[in-house]
Image 1 (cartoon, helix red, strand yellow):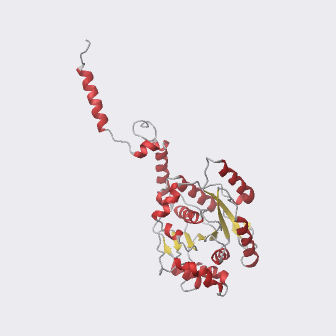
Image 2: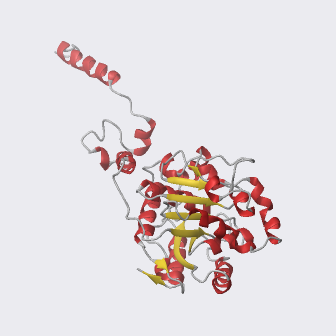
Image 3: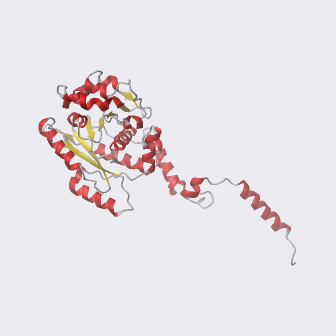
Amino acid sequence: MSGGSDPTVSRETESAATSAQNAPKASPSDETGGSGFGAYNSISSNDTPIGAAAQRASQILHPGSVALPKPAHRRTLTIANQKGGVGKTTTAVNMAAALALQGLTVLVVDLDPQGNASTALGVEHHSGVPSSYEVLIGEVSARAAIQQSPHSERLFCIPATIDLAGAEIELVSMVAREGRLKTALTDLDDIDADFVLIDCPPSLGLLTVNALVAASEVLIPIQCEYYALEGVGQLLRNIELVQAHLNPALHVSTVILTMYDGRTKLADQVAEEVRKHFGDAVLRAVIPRSVKVSEAPGYGMTVLDYDPGSRGAMSYLDAGRELAARSAVATSDGTQEQ
């Protein structure tokens, strides 16, 4: 019949409308991330970007899911680059967190007066707290200055306070001024730490020299941008001077590429140039330019605590595994042995 209505069709239409109203609403992340309830209900959760990130985070945070082999000897690395903004502190804290998350015990020594590494690891570093400043001038022992990070039972830190800003001047008149950190860290010989990572200020002053004397390895972060190698030449010359006069065992064992943006030709060109210059010292894992990595310190966290499923967190986990797998240790003549 024309112009009439079928009561059966009307009831079905009304039922469908009611079901649509009562259906769960897609969250903003579903709209932007592509994991909405309806469109992807036949796809496995880990086939979507958000589902894959959640699965990775679950694997990362599951206790005992991954365990790296302990190095035969404690490895002490100074993370240095006189150029600012290349990711020294970011690399120090996230590499430390990646190693700790995978079963190793790590101590971070914050030698930057800004104290950003201390902030990211969630430890107290206000004036009056025993810090690397008191350790350097001999007021407290390194053992007394250690704090455990609230984010991991295997992650420790000797924090930096603003008092460290005056240490460069005070150290000038002190005996054996270049080796004061090395002497202080001998107090930790019986502590079960697999890695000691020393975060340096963006300069080549006495604080950085102390860090180079105290370590056997240097890790250099290099950003994938213009002028990436600018300043690295001067750092390498300083390393050679320290090798010749103060620490023959010192060598550049690791170079890590940071702020990599795969959408640009420039990033690939810089990466190629760095790999050509440093060879096998360059880690295969590269750290992408990431908002999550930048945001994490503002919450007093590493990116592995802030967003464990993010690309930045996964990249640092890969870099940590690769660093731990390189079981090279420096011999007394500065060569490496496996």
